[in-house]
Length: 223
Image 1 (tube, rainbow, N blue to C red):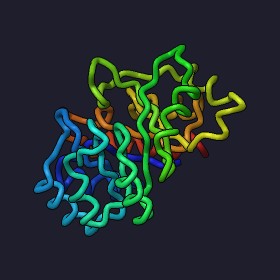
Image 2 (cartoon, helix red, strand yellow):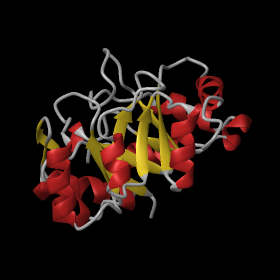
Image 3 (tube, rainbow, N blue to C red):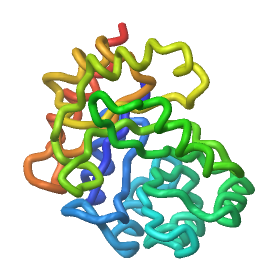
């Protein structure tokens, strides 16, 4: 069970999350209260000793325009990207050349043809194939970190569809907390979970005890 602690904004929060057992930490270059610049990202990278556990969140508003943080992340050896939007083929080729892991973000709407919509979006990833889907509730014009719980029963139902097996592994996000992570995992059975606002004392500030409790609940749900 992969655990990603997203929206890390300080070196101490990054260290706390990794010491608690997080597999990945997310650095947000997209927007919102957890967005950081490359100067702060440099300090986080220095504190944790390297890029291995980092996922860079980047947004392609235009396929041909390089988003903030992308070139920095590539230059610093970060090889995991949580992608909002889809980059142009030359950028995909660059990511493929460097053996990058791509997490394609899809916002879930209950009743929408989830897997048909995802399959249609993946057509544009025709150079490098995403290794993961991030299924998030999103909403209100925000890309994530809303604290809105996804419809787990709907996702569980969609996961049982025969055509679901052809799609990438997926991470569950949206309103997860230490209190509900176990229930969500047992219901939906994702390959990993992603949390941001659910382990914070304030937007962008992680609570170390909540982070530990979340990771324990996620790992305990599969034992």
